[in-house]
Length: 534
Ligand code: ADP
Image 1: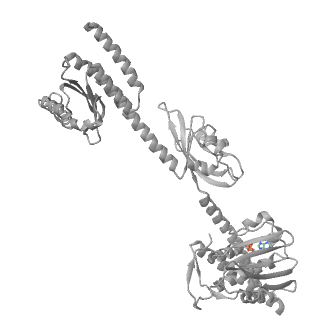
Image 2: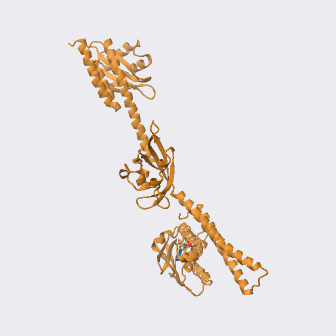
Image 3: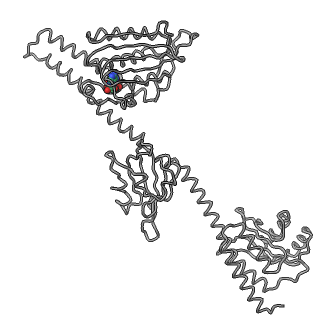
């Protein structure tokens, strides 16, 4: 038999070891199991349990010793009494014998202590002894109470830890699923987090990006290619600004350029020192391109509209002068000039209206079956009357070409644009050929010329609004760069495709497809809105 002194020493030593083990354990479940097993052992008990308050403030058993989970519900009553009346309740002994009956074990005594940290009630710990053993003493109670205080702290820590983990998981999910790129930077602007949207925006994988300087991975540059992140990083430029931002171009690893807006939130250490930053990167390429297009639009249009207006004004003021004698032929020439320039203005304004209609969301088409080769012959005849002998027109449509199902007036515009370009960009004249044949439910047609041709790298850009190839002839001929954009949009609104092929110095070929009219279609003119090809 141990002396009481030795026993206390042993218990103290035991408590210390136990506390160390508890402090090392942050997961709630194993910690609770460890605590209750040790508490039962410390007091030479037979059974034990820990019940914690759930979010509804009800005690709920979370760990037990010597009791299988199927027996836990038998404790509902005693827990209820403990919760409402406390461990000193006069009902406790009655509850204990009810419990002993329910469990079919001889229970003699229970010691129940609240688990409290600060002013927070966490729950309750119960240790029970079987009737065969001696009862709990005041010492036992004291020992358990010292232990419970520490256990409460450990349990509280583990709950905080679990909450922090859950919070971090939620934060991770938010960062990861954000449509915007998100990065975290350390105090030396190196990347410590890199979400999936950042991978998409930059083409860098997370593994490669982590640990690298942000100026290397994001490398926002200006129009001239100067890396703003190196020369004018807003975090370094404005150290007192906690929410700086910057805009610029980023080259994706596959080579394509995007325009981004990057805003930063500076993380401050308690001393106020820079502790890193969170960067939010948004792809605003579309807005930037729209802005650029808007300014191109204004400059191209003001130039294009100014020229015919100036010519008309020049002719008109000459014609109205009374001090200058003009012969009949000169007058007629000037009047023709005014008429031509007015036509050009009307065409340009017509194109502009069409573009704005299209950009507003759709083209109203009036499709009907018609013979494309007849329409082509018609348009060619109108052009042939206006050009001199430098051009020869050839029509090469397959005989018995099936009718196409399209808006005839819009297709007239397509043919006019293509023939007008063929003439404009063939300074030496030559043959302009139009033809077509049925292919896979469509009529595939073309216009070819023997003009200056188009370089291969220019071909994909031709159909963009306001795009003009930069060559001497284009500079000398007038045009807003809208014709091919409109032409392709009209074809695509019909469900067709359009593309070009060219050899520099030899000539160009423009191809397009239109749907073949189904044989059973009635000869009425339905009106449908087809989305444009944008
Ligand atoms: P615009 O003729 O008003 O400039 P378009 O959209 O019709 O505008 O054509 C865009 C550009 O494509 C032209 O500026 C020209 O450089 C080039 N292009 C179009 N058609 C031809 C062609 N048949 N041959 C050579 N270049 C062409």
